[in-house]
Every structure is written in structure tokens, then in C-alpha cells.
Amino acid sequence: MAREKGTGNLQMEKSGRWTVRIGINGHRISRSARTTDKTKAEAFLNRFLAPLGLGAQKLPLAEAWHHYEMSPNRRDIAKSTLDSKRTVWMAFARWMEKYHVEIGHLAEVTEEAVAEYLMQFKCNHSATTYNNHVCVLREIFRTLAEKAGVVNDPWANVCLRADDSVSRRELSLDEVERLYSAASKEGKEWKLLLATGIYTGLRLGDCCRLKWECVNLERQLIQVIPEKTKRHAHGKPVTIPIHPSLMEELVKAKEAAFSRRDAEAQREVLDRINRIDRINGSVDGSSILQPKLETTTSENSVNSVNDVSKPPTPQNQPLCLCASARDNFTSGFVNPVIADLYLNRKWQLDAGLRRIFKAANITMSIRMDGRCRKTVIASFHSLRHTFVSLSANAGVPLPVVQSIVGHCSTTMTRHYYHESLDALRSAVAAIPVIGKREEGKGMRGEEGWDRINRIDRISGSGDGSSTPQSKLETPTSENSVNSVNYVSKNPSSIPARLHRLDRFFARNLITEEEFKAARARILAEL
Image (cartoon, rainbow, N blue to C red; front, side, top):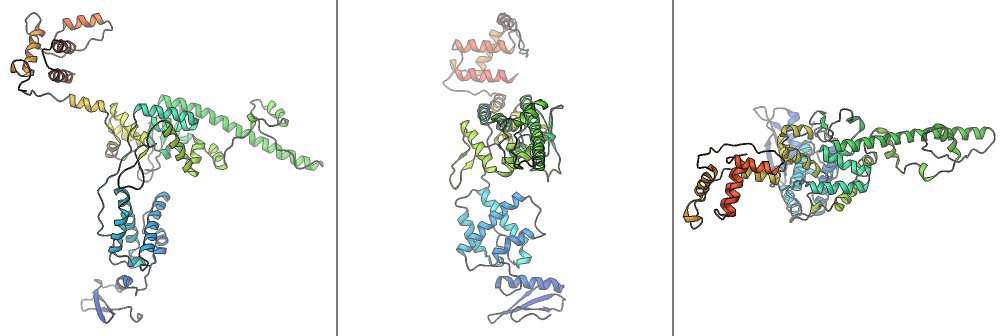
């Protein structure tokens, strides 16, 4: 079929390949399509003409997101991720509409316009946010390149910035205790939510949506499939033993859940009785509009029937919950109200967590230079960092911690691991001390270590005999007199050597630096 005038044409060369020819403003332009297939050559011609506004493929910026969302070439991602990408695209489209009105189609976006946008965007955003915007916009352009006729991708040569992300910090034990105390004052479900995060290391979404079917109180185990890694880990659940403190809270919550379930069942029975009474009242000529009877919480069924005619009291009033929250009671959520907040009113959940952190006197975010928003340094996710750090510092192997928290590799687990200060000091103290000659210090200009060794040998022999420096176990007697006798009878033991070192320092036979170095060397032998 012949093409319209001014839209170019295709010509087959002797080699069998197609060549694109078009005349623009008196200039004739030729480009090889590098293919022998005419259909592919037609597609190449349309992509070549799109930036010039001459081809049949023109995709307006206003319709680009709709085409990307419906494109079969894009990756299948979660709805929340798709919404965040839409936010990125809409910000770019609004900027183009404000500063480059002449650009109306996707193929007309140039590298200069992209550089101008990124120069303005990077001034008030972190490198992580900057890189996220670049990757999202680059993916959208590549997905729609063929449909929009994009020949030269304006994002192809854009470089990413060095990562400057700030990870959530771990919380100290004192901060965790203050946080747990503040959550207890906020409510029972908030207390259970914080306890779940502290003793399981689960993410906020998994803690909020935890169901009783995932909790085995008899075996004291929690088996749950993390929502974040559900697709990557092929639905593999993580198994977490229940801590005794968490077990106590879960038992209380289970009993309360059964009580609520029984109350809901009683309400349904009494609602049916009310409907039957209204129908019967209309049959015998009485008023159809009978007053609604309230639900009672009496355990005795006979008393509950007799109490139907009683006026409502504050004790038998129904719970003030929205419809979705009442559905959560029957769906088996451990924290039904918290689950309702997470699924339908997440801003209220965030506000509640901010109140708890503020009551615990824990700073959640700080101001950093070059960023328009505050940077979060502590949040509910910090409990996950704390769980990994406490487990690792207690000697639990990283592969075991990785299995509990559900990480795909130990590399991510190491990212969550924060070494304790005591562990770092122990590592430094374990390094052997190398003697250093210090001019002008020490008695008679001798090296400190040589003098300490001579004094140690002379004092350690007691009766003048040589005593081998062998490592003996520390006595465990609770009687201090027996401990002193043990030290005197075992002059080569660790406690005895430390005791002698204290006496040398008390008599000013060695300097303070020599005392600290010798003590670290003795403790390193443990």
C-alpha cells in the first residue's frame, strides 16, 4: 500500500535490505533499516518519523501511563509498587507540561529536557530517591519505545548517583523497654503489636496481618509467609519459635478473641429473635416497629433470655467498630483493630506509632542537608534490626537468623546486623600486645614489658622456684576466703596474675599504660 506524501518511502537495495528515504525541507535523508523484512522496515520508518511528527505513531504524554499500565511487556508487580511508579511518572509529566509546553509526545522528549529535569530534581532529594526516579522513567520509556516510536532513548546515558541511603538504626534495650511500656498505655493490641515485632523480627505489615491460623500455641511456633518476599521466595514460610513473653500475650489475646466471637454469636441469635418477634407482632395486629433488643453478655443462656426485656446498659452495649473491623474479628486476625487500620486507614496506624515513639522519647526522623523531607532513622522496622543484632550478638549463627527473619541471603542479614560495643571491645582486646619502647618513661629506662615479666617471675615463684605459666580454671566457690586461698595456692592462675598486677600498680612499680596493656594481655588468654 502506497504511503502518504511526506511520510517517506521504502526502497529495496540490491543486497535485499530495505532503505528508508524521506525528503524534509528540501533535504533528502536516507537510512538503512538493516533488515530484509518489510514489516520490520515499516516499523523502523515509523520510529524514525515519530520525533519529526510525521509518522503514524504518536503517543501523547498524557496517555503514556495508561498505555504503560496496559502494556503486556511490563513486569508483573504489586499494586503498591505500580502506584508508586505512577506517582513518579505524574511528577515528570506535570513538570514537562509546566516547563516544556512544546513537547506533547513521548518521542519528542530530548536528552536536554531530561537533563534539565534531573538537575532541578536532584537539588532537594537524596541519591536514593533520585536513582529510583531515573530507573522508573527509564523503564517506562523502554517499555513504550516501539509503540511511541522512540528512536533515541533520552534516559540511556543518564548515570546514577552514589548511594547515600540512611538505614534504620537498632534500638537499645532501654529504648525497647520504654517503647513497650508506652505501647502498653496505648492499648492491648498496640502492646501485642510491639511484642510481636520485638520477639519475632517480622515486618510491620506481617505483624498487623498476623492470623491465628499461623500461630500454633501448642508447639509454640509461628509460621507465616512474609508478604514482601512471597513472590521471590515462592511462598516459602518462615518458622519462628514463640518467646515466653510473647506466648503470654498471645494466650491473653486468644482468650479475648474467643470472648468476642461468643459475643458476636449471641448478637446474631438475638437479632434473629428480634426479627421473629417483629414478624409475629405484625401477624396478631400489634405494631411492627418493635424496639431493638440489646445483646447481653451473660454466660447463662436462661438468664440471657430473661434479660432480653431489660433496658440496655453500658456493659451490654456492642463494640464501637466499623464494618470492616467486625469482619476482621471473624477472619481470624490476631489484632483485628490493628489489621483494619493497616488495610483501610494506614495513616491512623502511622499516627499511633508516632505517639508511642514520642511517649518513649525516641527520635524518629532528623533533618539532613540537601533533602526536602526529614530522614527516618528509627521506626517500627528498627525492631527488626534490633532482633537480628541481639540474636547475632548472643552467638546465634547468621544462617539461623537468616532463616528466622526470612532473608534470601546472609548478605542482607549482615546489613541488619549491628555489632554491640562490648563485642567490638572484646575483639580489640583479643589482639596480642606488642611491646613498645618509650624513652623517658619507666624505671631506669627499661622496657615496660621486660620489667613486668621479671617482676611476674620473681613474685610468681614465691619460694624462688620456677612456675610454668599454664592456664588454670577460675574457682567457682562462693566463699571469698576460699577464693583467696585458691589464688595463693595457684600463683600461675589468671586470677593470681591479675591480683599480682594490681599490687604492682598499687605500689607504683608500673605505669598506668603498662598496667592496662598487661591486663588486656592476660584477659586475652581466656
